[in-house]
Image (tube, rainbow, N blue to C red):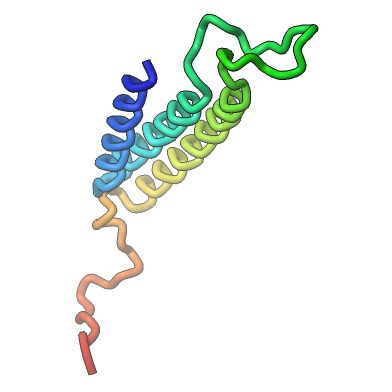
Length: 125
């Protein structure tokens, strides 16, 4: 099960990096969302994937049993989901506002600070 999840996490990382290297803002946003999901799956997989033993310490025990899943990565993933969603919502609003102002979602066409007719600077002195 964990080997299969490693392949899925690797594929999600590859897809997210491919999308984030695009010139279009919407693809970059989708890549950022997929990257957040890949990181969440990676953290969740590190805590062992078991359904047989719940992560509960018994009355007569002082530590968690070795077969149980680690509850700390599960808590970290819950926090990471909230952070990733809020980050994605901020980027979505920022991308939409940039599209409204500039009229394009292509990052090459968004270079308003660089003059179009200006000559390039000298390459050496």
